[in-house]
Length: 263
Image (tube, rainbow, N blue to C red; front, side, top):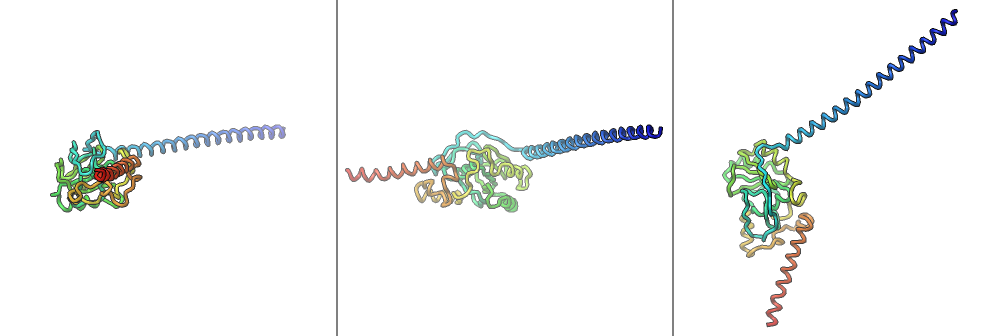
């Protein structure tokens, strides 16, 4: 009788152990699923927050957007009539304004070419207070795609920042929307020539460029480009166009003396 009772106890004990193991396994599965779900929710939440922050940073109040029609090279020295002042794109000279801080106005047609490369052009009223000018200049660090200069044309505010197809106005250099605009569109990718150089070309201001044009009777694009300029920096197509015009010009100059000698 005792043996039978002991056997029953063993079976009961074994059943209890199996039930306990099944219970623990179910608990582990629940915890595992819960952990994966929590991790997934956390990842989705972080992604959603990142997207929200990115969208919020891109939503900049006061930005005006424009469609840029033609943006071809025109002859160096030719004045272009732009629809906006300062312009946000359009036809321009074959060289560009080096990205830097300028204390005098720069040539508009050169600055527009810098916009085509992804630069932001910050222009300000020449009568702007010096502390504001200094704060604007402090926004530039070597290598930045920023052209900062006074502007003598019409502007809707003391400070105007322009990128390709976009523009924003500001009353002060510390304007939050202005700062966001520069962060969002400096070295822009939605431009005709993203990644092209913003150095190695023209570092002279507008008055100096005008003097060069007067002195040479119309300086060629190859003479205005600095020694660091290469066709690869501004795109193969653009370099090829420049090279072709130089070669054709050379052939024309060689033909004229030949005609005179024949006569």
